[in-house]
Amino acid sequence: MKPLRICTYNIHKGFSQFNRRMVIHELRDRLRTLDADIVFLQEVQGLHVGHAQRHTDWPPQPQHHFLAEGGWLQTAYGGNAIYDHGHHGNAVLSRFPILSSTNQDVSDHRFERRGLLHCEIELPGSTLNAHCVCVHLGLFAGSRRRQMDALASRMEMLAPGDSPLIIAGDFNDWRNHADDFLAARLGLQEVFCGDRGRPARSYPSTLPLFRLDRIYVRGFNVRASQSHFGGPWSKISDHAALTAELLPRT
Image 1 (cartoon, rainbow, N blue to C red):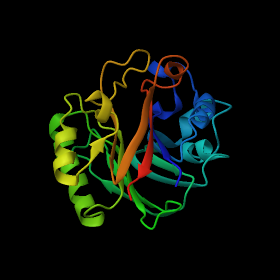
Image 2 (image 1 turned 30 degrees about the horizontal axis):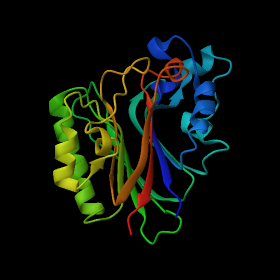
Image 3 (image 1 turned 135 degrees about the vertical axis):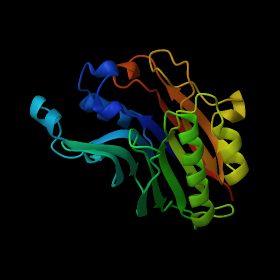
Image 4 (image 1 turned 120 degrees about the horizontal axis):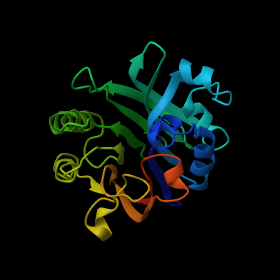
């Protein structure tokens, strides 16, 4: 089987840093250059009536459908923050069949709506399906601990043992507590930690200082990993995009 290429990206609802410009079209073009088989997206705008009225080139369909056109056959979306004029959340784009998808509400308080988008994806050339979870955890340490506990409990039940598992997204994990927790509970490794010892810096995308975005895997060998920041990436989102090439363990 050829390497599985994956990406995680907080797309900032299709707007540049500080919401200066609507950049969803540039974002789609740039995302395609990464040639990822499975894409984990955060802050995806499923609907926003106001933006559609203000921007003549605002896509008529949800952002995950717009971004997937011509590149990914399958999509899944979990709306977490729901308001009168729309909603946003996490999404997964896949070149391979998504067999099931479920969005689990792990909101810790009413000011931050968070969810875990769990997809089971059929991988070509493999007898095992991959469990893929797109996450965007809370800003407060206590919230993140409880959300990671909910994540681990769900995966212990649905993806036990050595089942192939990929968890990616914006962890907001300023102090890198997730590594030890997810390694102990689920046997996961972060794709950048093998050669660098720590997750990649990913925020802000102009010159990253903070290690907020992660890709954790189990049942795969990490062939390569890369952080995409600076120009032209910093003109699209305030987060860097992260990619990794994985080889399933036999």
